[in-house]
Length: 594
Image 1 (cartoon, rainbow, N blue to C red):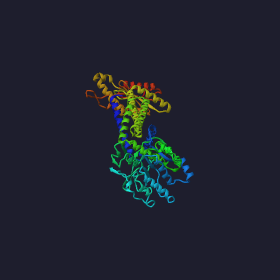
Image 2 (tube, rainbow, N blue to C red):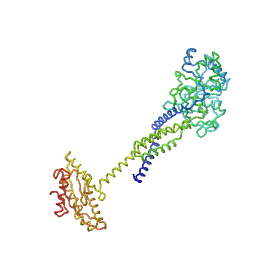
Image 3 (cartoon, one colour):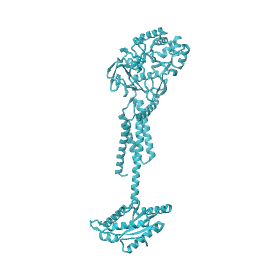
Image 4 (cartoon, one colour):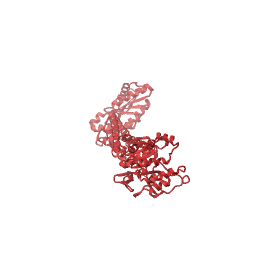
């Protein structure tokens, strides 16, 4: 491939990439396309999380006191119903507090007073009031006032935001609250929100750190625990981040949520079944309590599938909600959140990959090599994307680069072979065309004669042949020179092309002789065409190399298949005899009979 064509190919390829990305940007305005890209990208995120979570270690200080399936059976046998009496929670909390846990965090809702067991409520309230390391939970919703009258919350439950604010949206802003008992609110300020939101595919990948209710901000349950663990009195919101301190920040996406980094499947954190704990308390087994709860952050929640607090997350289709909240706290303490790269950077990466793959396509002739190269590039990119998520918590897009590279690869190949096809056509044209007259050459004439004979024998398609010779051409060359002779040949050739149909095949037979294969033409029609060409040449003024104008005449012989022969050589010989007769008879004429 010569340089001009090579550079043209590069320019076309650059144009293709530009058009492709313009198209992708345009498609990005359509929700169906956005949903498709998002869904596939989220699946790729889940894949990477499953790979890297095997190499991450959860905080060993976080344990879960779980109401598992066995505990549920135990409770039903012992107490006959769920939920259990709040006296049990008071007793369990008191027992755990004796072995000095760091924190006790309830992922359970103590919403309404139990009028049948008021003393149990009182005991739980007193226990919560007694210790400042106990945390309770509640949630927000958008129930209508007719269903549940919204209430004002004590301002001590608000999160102190020193600087910045959040934009209202469906993930952070709510109009109603399912609050804990008023007495519990009076007993403690350590109450957080446990709302969760799923993506469209039902999987939870993000969580909302801060909620807005009645124009006030309230913390996620795990956020308020983390703020207190880090001994801070509030947070700042700056540059789309929640800043607890210099070492602990929570990046926010455009929904004001944060993407969690997962530590594995269900059971990542050590689970201590509630039934075993109740048994240990009854048996005064302080060794059990100390081994499991001393100096631990204890989350209390349900893990039994029958109690419906089961979530689907990237690494597990059935993970208890309490483990989800523990993961959020773990992320805060490790400063381990996923940071999503901007869409502009994703586009830039895609463009770079497209040019790398496209350049290789243009430089390499082997289809197998280019396909293998593209697969290797995409595989390396996937490995790199997984490594960046593992090492630096960066989420770079996989789907957009993959779609862009594959599409560009296909388009580049189409363009490459389209140009090759045009090159082939050009080469073929040069091979079958006479360079001087631009008529078909003698080899092509012979091929077409065979084709026309075959069509005649198979389908009965009639055709005619006329042979043309320029009169006194040798003498003309001797008189005016070969350059003028070439001028005459070119101009006669142009007259032949102008006075024949596009389906006719005008050729330079050799020297000053030319021929036209007249397709679908009988004898009479061929004679008319031959006479027209003869007259056109006779009446034309030919301009020579020196600018002089002269007249030229031709002699023409005509043959028709079936009448004058049924083989190429027979037709050529017959038309040649007619041509010879025309010359003997004074030239400047058409002869069709020998």
